[in-house]
Length: 166
Image (tube, rainbow, N blue to C red; front, side, top):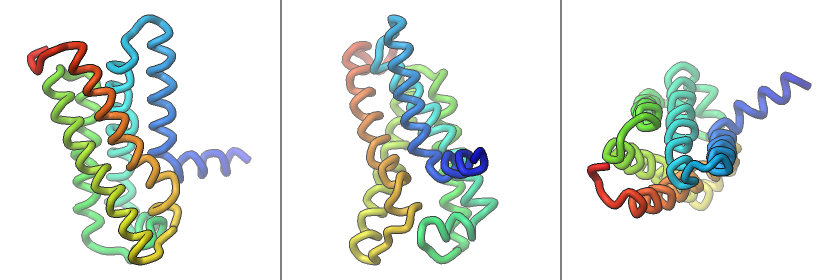
């Protein structure tokens, strides 16, 4: 039972990080913090940051397993994907404590990576009929939801702060 819970959590890690970020932001908003800023910060830390570090580890250190979950053959490009994930992971973690401009840069990078991933997943579903869990499951939905959450929360945060110098 516990093994199944842990396995399920790890197989859906990115999406779980989205849910945890939204829950933490909602709790902090109930305590008087601005929801959009909290959602932005926690989304950068967890689904972008922690998930980026997690997926970097799987692509770099477990490439065959990772490729199998996505429905791809193992490839040396997994290392490069892992490094891109590592970059987003580090940016996301640092942006949690960063200023407005750093959060903007991290948001742009995460939106481009995860939004591009979502487009790639759709292409694989249509062109290759790839509906493996790592391509069409919760990872796909994380790649769709996170860019939307980051863009919307950042725009609200930007309007509230009114400047890139905040």
